[in-house]
Structures are given as structure tokens and as C-alpha cells.
Length: 362
Image 1: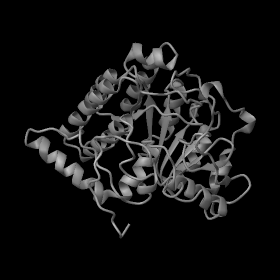
Image 2: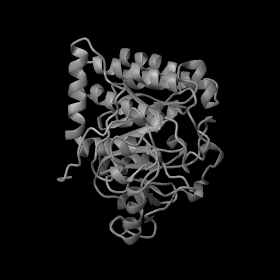
Image 3: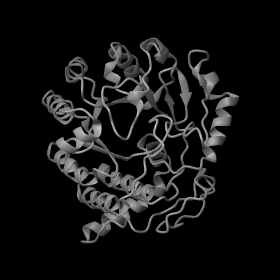
Image 4: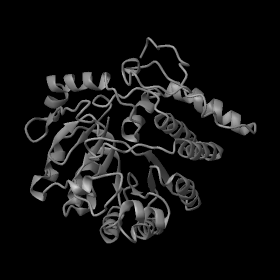
């Protein structure tokens, strides 16, 4: 099971596609690190915010999560360079600890969209220092909007040449971001740039990059308004813990569509919450969610779970590239597995195909 730990809603950035910074938590409201002792054994954990490094007790949080999880990765603006380097210096012998610096493009574009001059330079210098220290699981993460998809390709090349990881997303609306007007209007340009990223990823020698091409093909489908390629099983395969101690299925809910929590970890054990009636109700809400979110926190678990459906697409397109062809991003698959037939009803991408029959064994 995977988890995202939202440590705070405080943030020094002023991002145009996210209003978390304008809705901060108070320090007194944020969970104490000891609360994390109640969590079960986990696979992947994402430490996020807001900006997690605004917390003075972030090392206490990391110390507990490293005992709980196989892998722990920060999502950070990189703004607090000294704090980040100091923590990773202390834990440099823990290869399961990594970080992604959120960056919206190269220097000018990033600083414009994230609202802080010098933000790109801080992020890049942080990553370069971590690489010098020998930290391997580091890289940039970009959220694509109307304004920065060309920069995504340049940022990818920078990551590739520095031998770092590269994460992608497209902006979404949700309670978490406090945004409800994030809409990609220049779809053709954004889709073309995601398509080009898929072509470059599939040309790499790393199988991890080939599966990233699948994920980015899913982002093309999201931008085009299609139903999720794979089902969302938030609240089953993953959960989010917010700064107040609430257990949430995801961070993509919108109040005017549906919103619910599974329980509060300050008041119950994790097992009581996870197996309780409220959790069952939340999972039913997920099973009939009208949205088509495609974010790594809820996609990665189902890519692993339904890997036998993903592998044929990956191998087919890798073979096509080897033969001098292209990754097919024009014909988008739709897999009849899990909750997929009851989610995102009413959404439509004319390029999306129903390629796979329902697997009765799932």
C-alpha cells in the first residue's frame, strides 16, 4: 500500500495553478510526528505539503517513515536549500530516501508560474548538491499547464543529461489545490509536447522510462477529456494523510462533486479507520467518481496491480520504436478492470478505444 503524507498547507511559493499557499494551516493544527507511528507497513510514501521543509520537526517525520516504508520521497519546492541538504547529509546512507523538486519549466517560466524569483536556481542548486553527495533518487517534477509544455521537453533533457529522475503531471482542480478553474485550453500544443515526451522516453534503454511513456500517454488522454485508462482505486491501494490527521482516499476530490474522509488518526487506530463503515462509504464514492484524474499518487498503484494489462502496450510500442516507428498516442486504450466501468461516466475522448475485455479474475 502507498501513502502520501501531507505535512502542512504552509508554503513559501505563490503558484498560479495552486492556492495552497493562500490557505495555510496553523502550526498548532498540524499533526505531531508521533501520530505516524500508528501507520501500517507501507511500500511507497510521498512526503508533501505545502512545503514539507517549513516544518521544524521534518527530521522526526522522516525518521518514523523510514521505519514504516520501503521508499520515502519528498515533493518539495527546493526553496529551503540548506535544510534539504542538511537532512540528506544525515541520511545519505539511506538509498530509500529521495526527492523531487517541483519546477514549472526553465528559469524564467518557472519563476513566473511559481511566483518567486530565484526559485529555479534554488531548486537546481539543491539537486546538484544532492547529486554531488551521491544521492541517486533525485530529480525535477513538472506540472504542465497552458503556459509551460515546451519547457517540459527542455527540463526532461536537462534531467536526462544529469542522470536524474523526471516526473510529470498536468494541473487539476481539487479541494487540495483550492483551484476550480484549471483548464488546459491550448490542448493541441500540450498534447503534441506530451507526445514528443513519450517518443523520447520510449527511445531510452531503461524499462522505467518505457512505463513512464505509458503514464504520459495517460496524461494525453486526461488533457483530451477521456476516461481513465486504468481505474482509480484510491482508498484501497493508497491513502492520503492530511495535516489535521484525516485519512483521505486522494487529493483529487472536489466538494461540488463529492468529498469525504475515512476517519481521523488522532481519534482512532489506522485499522479501525481502514476497516470501518466510513471507509466503505468512501470506497463506494471512489468507485463511482465522475472525475478522470490522472495523478501519479493514484495511478502508480494500479499500474502495478494491473501490470499484465500495461506490459503489452509498453512492449508493442517499444518494438515499434526499435523498428523505426513511433509510440501510438493517437489510439488510447481503455481497460475494463476494477471499477473502471463505473467511473468517469459522461467523459469522452474520441481517440479512446475499448481494447480489452473485462478480466473476470480481477
